[in-house]
Amino acid sequence: MEKTQMLNVRVSPIVKQQAEDVLKQLGIPMATAIDMYLRQITLTGGIPFPLSLPKAPTALNADTMTDEQLHTALQAGIKEVQNGDTVCGE
Image (tube, rainbow, N blue to C red; front, top):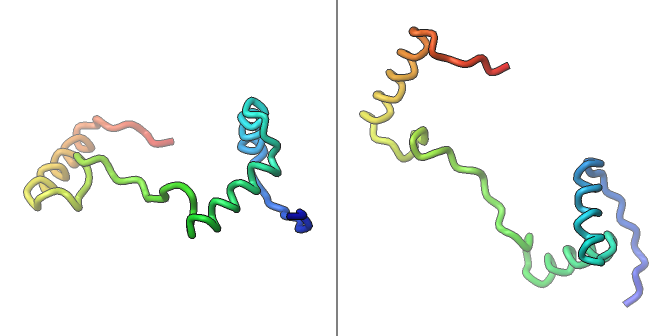
């Protein structure tokens, strides 16, 4: 099959370079890797790797905590702030 379509994408220069480094070690040109990716999408009917949102750590995940556990965790956090046991996020 002849390749006749041009695909222009914007990506981070760092990510592009890192991908090129890996592909070079594999002996695969970038165009071939992208073609492989697109073919996998058509073959699988979706993105060829799992996509999911990261889950909060269990200890801090309110969705998995009882009301009592959540209340205890919030009180501990308030106590840390009152005692000055915090770290600046900047």
